[in-house]
View 1 (tube, rainbow, N blue to C red):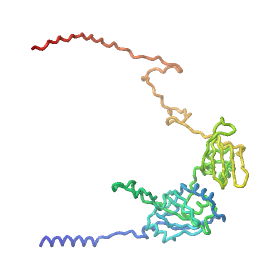
View 2 (cartoon, helix red, strand yellow):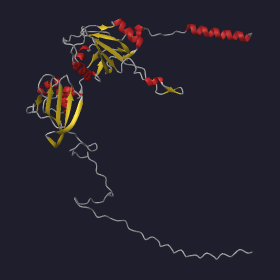
View 3 (cartoon, rainbow, N blue to C red):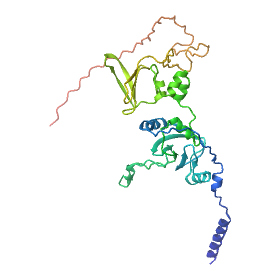
View 4 (cartoon, rainbow, N blue to C red):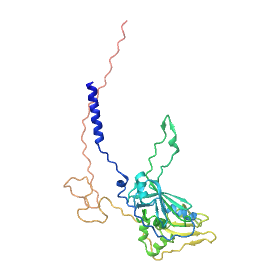
Length: 364
């Protein structure tokens, strides 16, 4: 009886302590208090023509793998719709609630990468940092002896932004798409091609901005103007089969305008433009004027010292086999080779030949 009473006393004490304990729960307002939802619509003039197949390919080539920074916190999953030159949906309160329920994919100022670009009749869908859904693999449904063939795919932590247009997607360029996404994403960081184009003279800079290729450009200029080619061809000139091989970059395909950019070494030697219904345009004369692109150079340094550095103490003595105090040999002469002295090895005494004793026949 006393044992039952003591048990009830312990249980009552534990329940009283549990009832008196305080549980702290972070609410939605506390968790989303520092999330900024300020929004200012853009004012970008849009063309009236509908998006063509070539424009769609250019957008995919120039937007995929582009890196930028988040202007605001982005929720995981899909649900953000930005109207071109319009408002952002959902509103401020629903935006905070979306982040509170789904979680934060990127904080303000975090680096983002466009990993996929999808087109709808009236919108462009951009997946950021892998997108809102994990890639499905059919092998995840296959197992042998209750052992899965592949490991479980990690959960998706990316986000998705839908850029919608009234009346359909127009013939828009990648810089215009980036300008429309300015309230959400910042692509102000220059790429290596853009930074390189800023160092060129004004005529070359304008040609690269207009996506034109001039005879005399180098590989880096062409990449800054048109991006990576769709295909490359290396062959000999049919008029000179024994001559050096040239490389030709091909942009576009029929029925769109096709450009053939021929390189000899690091310079563009010929540009052919084939447009539908027009004669072939051939440019084979230097179009850069007096400007000569610098040749590609590399600086090679041995060790930690810079080439041409003659300051005292910067160079260490080369390795040597001389002992301290040995004189240096005259320049451009070979020293006498000293052979080690041979020691007389003691001669070994000859081993006397031993005759085995005659075997005695066994006794009978």
